[in-house]
Amino acid sequence: MSHYSKVLLLTLTITLGWSCDGLKAQGLGNAPYSSLGLGEFYGESYSDNSGMGQSGVSTASGFQINNLNPALWVRNRFTTLDVGLVGQYKSIAEGSKIQKNAGGNLAYVSLSFPVSPRWVIGANLKPYSFIDYENQSVRPVIGTGANANYITSGKGGINKASITNSVQINKYISLGLETSYFFGNVRKASEVTVFNVPGVPDIVDKDGNIVNVEVVSLNERTIFSDFAFRAGAAGRIPIKKDNKLNLNLGGAYSFGTRINANTTTSFELTQDSYPVIPADTLENDLTGGLTLPEQFQVGTSLEWPFKLVLSADYSRQSWSKYRNFDNVSEGLKDVNRFHLGAEYLPKFTSLNYFDLVRYRIGFSYGNTPYTVNGKNVNDANVSLGFTFPMGRGYQNFLSAALVAGQRGTGGAGQIRERYARVVLGITLLERWFIKQKLD
Image (cartoon, rainbow, N blue to C red; front, side):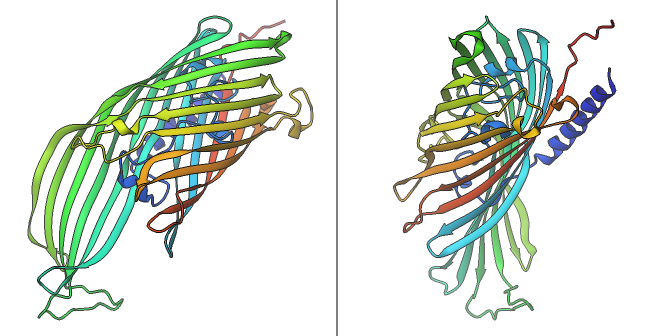
């Protein structure tokens, strides 16, 4: 094994070890809508597809892993390691109230391993969804004259570890199957803080906070674990001879599943941060599940190999079929989304470095599963992307995708989110399967 191979394997080992620890309950900043369903979703696109409006179900370059369709992993003819990071800045407005926050996380770690010219096995670890919210309101306690501060909060998320098998059926058609294991945990809490109690003088600290308060807490911790499957198919139809222009077609289907869940609920009563009564476990390791609905994606693209790709995708996920731990739908809506993207490579055979950089642009629009006061919450974003070759022989790549968008509107009783997201990816190729020849 070459020195470079050892470095690649060491990098993968360290990254996977850090990833498994770093994926714990990491999100992309405060997300009010994450209180519903399974939370906010990271999506399946890697850095290159993120720069194309998250499109690309039908096409793959072979230089980077395309995770939108399991059937496209077989295009990677060399052992390929893809590692990605994601960061996001968000401005949330509700009426005249504005909150700004930021967050980041590991986006994915993937390894593609060609077993034969027609069969590729891949391994993938990535966050699937996250929950990160806190809501507060102050209301009087009826009949007492006291006031209460109500706080509901949630943190955590679900992660996804996958094995993908992708095979080339013939010269033009490929199939793929992804087997995934979902795991993670979510903590939710409801707290009621009572203050301004008649006959009890308020004690205020140096920061002006009332300290002689009673807090009633209801804490819930849910652990998730289960398997799910996603299948894909892709086809290439030559339009011009000598591989000068191809029409690509592709589709992926995520099977609906019931994710196993175990919930523990406890009750606490404290005063001045000290327990009034011992914590009481109301439900211990209660077994249930969440219904994850099916999703399908279809796409088409025109490909001028090593020059230009024009891509268009449509995706739909039946969130109306979602059921939570209590078998309640939470009023979620089916999601329909369109993705458009383009990738341009100036000149593949050029000696000019910037002729070898791949440039991308994209647009995506659709609804979310959420409604606020009877109005659908829509999401639209635009994106730019770049892939820079690096290393000896330019066989490795550094990719960046910049995504800017808005979700929801600023009307009465509505929540508007404006976000800027950056996805950075590093791709390492190792030509383990090229036999060395001596003259």
